[in-house]
Amino acid sequence: GSLDSDQLGKSLRYAIERGAVLTRLEETQRIAHIGSWEFNRRTDTFTGSTELFRIFDFKPERKTLAASELLGGENPFSIFGELHESAFLLGESEIETEFLTAAGERHFVFLKCRRDEGGDTLYGIARDVSERRRGEDLRKQHEVAQQAARMKEQFIASVSHEMRTPMNAILGMSNLVL
Image 1 (cartoon, rainbow, N blue to C red):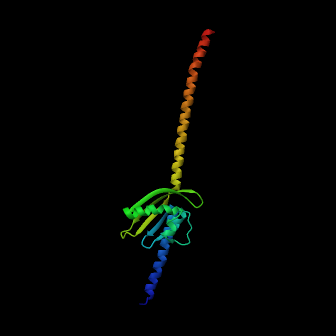
Image 2 (cartoon, one colour):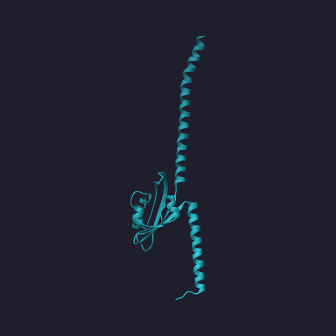
Image 3 (spheres, rainbow, N blue to C red):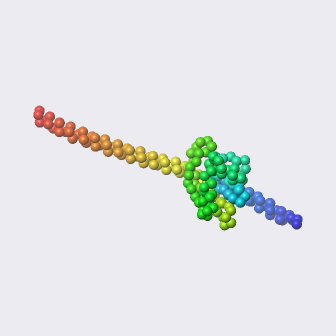
């Protein structure tokens, strides 16, 4: 079969619109710090979004990789192995964990994936929660510092009271003697 000009035009418009939608999706993921991935165990392929690879500070030459290339060895993606096993078994799995980037920076990430109805493919998201975790750590440190300041004030007040009581007695007795 040959394509007429109307079918060709529709296909071209569809391809352009699809490209625009994918561009908007990638920009939305970048803004929200959420990456996505797909893993197919039958074909052993792992496909990740640009934001997913940015979160993990990983610069692949292509977006679709053999899972064995990515999930084995010493790299941040090794945490996906256990997550995938659990999702294939239970249908869904999630974890919040920390990892070190290639630059040695500590990051925190929330990962969640779900098995498709066919049972061979997982679809997942990765959310960079490093800023939230750092905020929680700072809040905890602030609370500890406030508690230490309160304890210090209580100690000084107690010591001050304990020193004033005998001093008042000595001053009172000295006034009686004079």
